[in-house]
Length: 460
Ligand code: P61
Image (cartoon, rainbow, N blue to C red):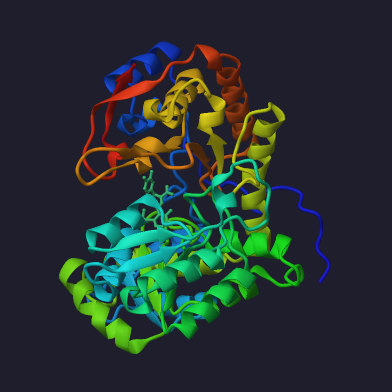
């Protein structure tokens, strides 16, 4: 099949939502009132919102039409059947457990499979996923290659699991302490980096040898498939639909925050092959979310999701989506600003430690950059560095800092144009030009877990 060169967005815009840049003095005031934490900002305080790509994408006319057709039966709803069929057709799994977002899906799967003292090898979990492993009494072990922690190193599949590390964990902990292995595709914590099919296949073989099931966190499995199509030998002529099917064929099941690649504003699921595991999880679903045919979603959510699952695997759509992120990354790199390389699938991750070499990690460079970019141009990104990932020893002694100190500019799907990308890159450049005069932040108050959502900060 010959492909035309891409021209522009493969959609036109039918509904718009006005946004405005609030005046600089107003932004300054909001930073102080909000204790230097951009999670405190209101929608109207922000010009361009790149906090997350989660639940912030634009649904299509077809999805909105599905909202009207959603069937709200308590049991046996028609929309659930549509969802189940879409999951089977697109992802290849027989059983679907619908949840309101990714976190309950993780919590139910982990609670069912883990015991106190379990170890879970991962490439890297995202913060809430890691927190759910810990909440279940387990410990996750990062097995990604060391290059994943080196922002400048350009490799095609920086989300891959290092098999030597994984073998080491299997030897040291023993298979009976490891209830499952999990791979996040793409690796959000490490910069939206993909995992190759070859790596999935090898991890699956190793997992099989030890009788350990392999699960995926598939929130961004389509962006991952796009990178496989572009970068992995033998996949250039395959469609995204085929690659998504193949990726997921290596997993026993997956947790899926549908707020990302699946193009809905709310929704999540566990998708499984095994009826026995399904039967073990559904009592938890009924206890915590709802009946098995709707769980945490309304029928209309399920209908929009079923349609989103088909839309997400459109080759032109996903190429355009990832290329927009790449465009922003290129604009930023052209100014000499350091980012994780290669540019990830859903976001540009600025290396905040390299941006502000004079600000130590204990003074939260990623949050400092978030505040300064908002001050400069009303753009909200999110810090994913020490404030989010640092850990204190159990005795409350030493603090362990994460290896990466990143500031993420996350691009919602089908929402902003490349003109917005230009404004973002130019705003960041103005912060870059005055970077040496910028000072660090310290904690005024913070909760014990998932700190960065609620922390109150102040200048040092
Ligand atoms: C995000 F600032 N991600 O990237 P839920 N797996 C993966 C995720 O990326 C993920 C979840 C599971 C978010 C939202 C978010 O500190 C933050 O549907 C790979 O959000 O429950 C979520 O899915 C959980 C933003 C999460 C944050 C935590 O923006």
